[in-house]
Image (tube, rainbow, N blue to C red; front, side, top):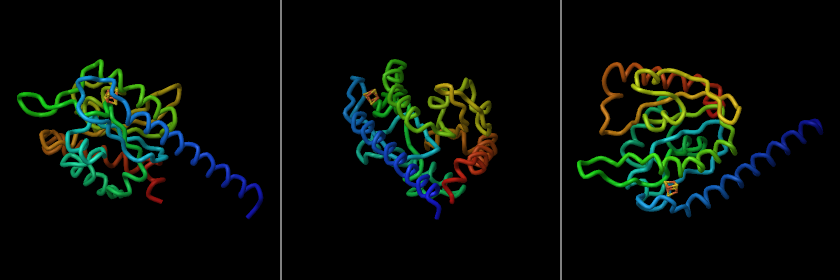
Length: 218
Ligand code: SF4
């Protein structure tokens, strides 16, 4: 093994260690955030995965707050079933993909049932945590899940306009790919009937073929 090759490996390892330590510091600060007074419980964060891919959900549910990890309940079961179909089981996904969200706290239940959609002010408050993660990781691919998350990156009126498509977007003057997914919640039927079934399959195929996803399968 040449000296130059060994130095390259060493600087790569040092770089990854520096990013992990930035992510750990970031997550430790994020766990202490209480900025939004109407939110319930403590912020939910995933693993400090140094990844070329970020998954961005809407906001955790009450079960995620109890279990202290994103997508830990019924919607997660469906979501991880989708990802297993394209090569990554839940455990590997959690270790290798950085899991973020538009809001990191549980917004509470609506009187008529279902979770409250975060208010614009709460989304704005929480956006600086997401922005910091984008700055640290410089992902090649983001996967926003559900209309609220998708709308932070793309103009969206109806899901049929964006699911099954890959869009190039610019964040901090850096180009990256965005492949949105519908929300896997049991309350939503969109992904269980046409054209949702076909478009979801198309979106998962786009993710499967993406170089960032392929790099995690090696
Ligand atoms: S939603 Fe975000 S900004 Fe608001 S309290 Fe939770 S972590 Fe903080």
